[in-house]
Amino acid sequence: MALGTDYSGQDCSLARALELVGERWTPLILRDAFVGVRRYRDFLDHLDIPRAVLAARLQALVDAGVMAKERYQDSPPREEYVLTAKGRELWPALHLLGQWGEQHLTERGPRRLYTHLPCGSRLRNGSCPSCGAVELEDVEVRPGPGLVSTRTDAVSVALREPRRLLDPLRTS
Amino acid sequence: MALGTDYSGQDCSLARALELVGERWTPLILRDAFVGVRRYRDFLDHLDIPRAVLAARLQALVDAGVMAKERYQDSPPREEYVLTAKGRELWPALHLLGQWGEQHLTERGPRRLYTHLPCGSRLRNGSCPSCGAVELEDVEVRPGPGLVSTRTDAVSVALREPRRLLDPLRTS
DNA sequence: TCTCCTGAGTTCGTTGACTGAACCGATGGC
DNA sequence: GCCATCGGTTCAGTCAACGAACTCAGGAGA
Image (cartoon, rainbow over all chains, first blue to last red; front, side, top):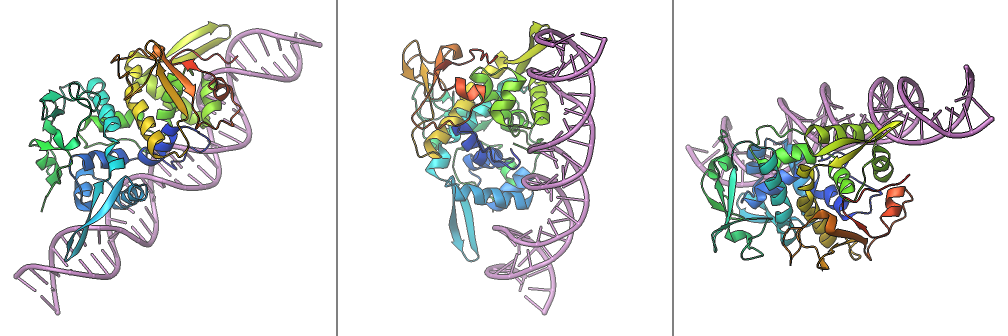
């Protein structure tokens, strides 16, 4: 979202949330994180985002406690960005917004299908209609009939197969 | 959100939605519309938004079918902006994002309380936990313990009393 | 009729975030 | 020694947001 993203003077929890996750690119970074993207390079390749912006956003998300930076190898030292519990709780809001876009802004069918694996039902409102709350690891993302993926980056290719949310995406 | 808000190359319904409702100020305009704000002047006074930006955003929302411009008096001719059915369906997503902000970005208690009047229960996930789906007109917004409203514009003052969602706010 | 006021914008110069390309430092492979 | 990769930082140019001033139409009062 946004630009100069402070909504000072708005005593409103939505404004506070938007100052953090309403900035331009941030929701898409989080969407990628939910499907398992963790590395700087993968975010970069999949989003076509300027490097400086990606670095700034990831840093802001870490500072806010939405993501955490974790060492995954020592030689050479490499770190990856993973969602914290606080970050994972953004899932219903982001999912709902995506579902709204799917229903109102697209003509072809859904691009991605979300299934709660233990019971097999399609997700509604970011949670399972029959089970209630949902562990994200139990949710499967699968390409839907509306998906037209022409991208060749590693993340897009991996997402052409069914995956579980949060399952780390390994591209190397 | 955003600046130059096209996420071309992202074949993703979330990106499509963000191109419309992810722009800077747009979510707050919609939030105000849900609590009954309809007039250019009221949006202006309550949001402290630059006039040019407000005009552009309202026009974009009308073009997208999220809001509609309706004549409410003829002499002098005056029009107001009301949510369409498509726009009202954004409520769960916006509400959830606000709730996330309430839980994670604020120390004092909730600023606004949302109640489903027919059954009296507090809203969860933008809908009623006992009744399921919800008519927005049946939802009451009430100031909560965390609210510190120092603003003196007509909208802020009106929101210090309980109101129903979508109930037109008359300030004149 | 003349003047003032209000609502709803538009215009315009300035500011500042986003963009993309180039550069940098550490590490590892050959 | 040379080259490639990962994860950034730096920098000049662009474009949207900002805020103040201006416009225009239609009353209201004198």
